[in-house]
Amino acid sequence: MPFAHITGWGMYVPEPILTNDDISKLVDTNDQWIRERTGIRERHIARENEFPSTMGVEAAIKALQVANLAPTDLDLIICTSSSPEYIFPATACIIQDQIGATKAGAFDLQAACTGFIFATNMGAQAIRSGSVKNVLIVGTEVLSRFVNWKDRNTCILFGDGAGAFVLQASEEPGGVMSAVMHSDGSGADSLIIPAGGSHHPATEATLREGRHFMQMDGKEVFRFATRVMGRAVTEALEQVKMTTDDVQWIIPHQANYRIIETAAKHLKMPLDKFVINVERYGNTSTASIPIATVEALQASRIKPKDKIVFVGFGGGLTWGAMVVEWTGPLPVKKHVHPAQYRLFARLRSFVRRAIRFIEGFFSRKEL
Ligand code: UT7
Image 1 (cartoon, rainbow, N blue to C red):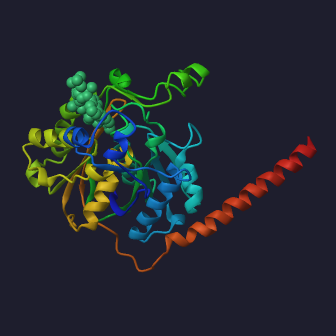
Image 2 (image 1 turned 30 degrees about the vertical axis):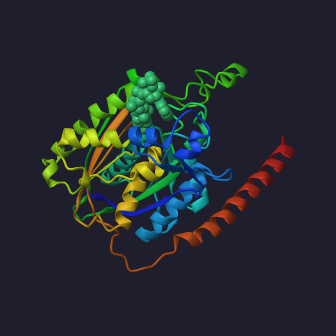
Image 3 (image 1 turned 180 degrees about the vertical axis):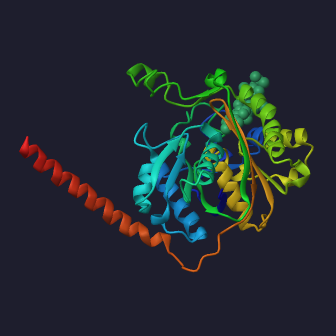
């Protein structure tokens, strides 16, 4: 049975930064309150011409560069987002087209902020089953467009960004070792965008009442997060007969510094084993775990063979954890340039649209 290794990683955050002081000009809050209650100082906000797909593409190309893998070698793309481009089509399909992953099946997975753990586990399981070899996982968010900038309970927390992993099959032991996935839909109302789906389609009233924005019971989510994070880590470790002593790094979903601090206490682990960057990005939902991972790698904190636990929680409610033995890129002889495929992808996309148009024109004539 092949092992699923994380062989590539990439991140992208939009340039514009929104500080706590900037937010204090929009709602009744202040830098000190936000820092003390959340640990957040600033977050990045997408420009008007940036979307989950465009940011996801940037992160994906970087991940493919690290893995030295051509987009045409991908078998599967799973995109996970709490702020997808559309209800359908899947953001994953748009990314597939833009990077030129001509062979890959692509779909979106929705598990709110836990999405990156669920998606990575699904990608790893597809590799373990032997049905695919190369998988791209993308977590990408433009949550700033679903935040009510008049609601101080939520607008202080979220930021935009994208992160990606490449997973590859190898007979060498390592990579994704275990994972746990949990859900509790009885808490669905705790973190929700109530309107815009088929339950409450868009109407004048839903717009007027601001029901297309995110709504959150912050205290409830805080209590839930602190309850499940430590438990999920222990459960994933037990599956592979490991304890926290065997672990070099915990990379948690970056939602609130205090939540991570509480999880560390529950696990009786020092906080310096946790990768934390919530201060500079806020909560980027599905993108927060890969962004934190990329930064830890760039700072040379993570080494090959390190045992890492990813742990996340979010709307749904959902939560999960994953134990990984870090490997890095697989040895390859050829050298590929994934970014060069983008031009080819754009051309291919244009030609396919043109063919579709011409086919449509002639089939209308035939009818
Ligand atoms: O990916 C998952 C996403 N969600 C989360 O992770 C959210 C989890 N929850 C949290 O992080 C925290 O609950 C918050 C940061 C949202 C809120 O922190 P808290 O310590 O639970 O504050 P609170 O809601 O209990 O509010 C305390 C006080 C209240 O005033 P009173 O009633 O004590 O007078 C609030 O009205 O702080 C007030 N408050 C604020 N003050 C200044 C609430 N929000 C703000 C604000 N600025 N932004």
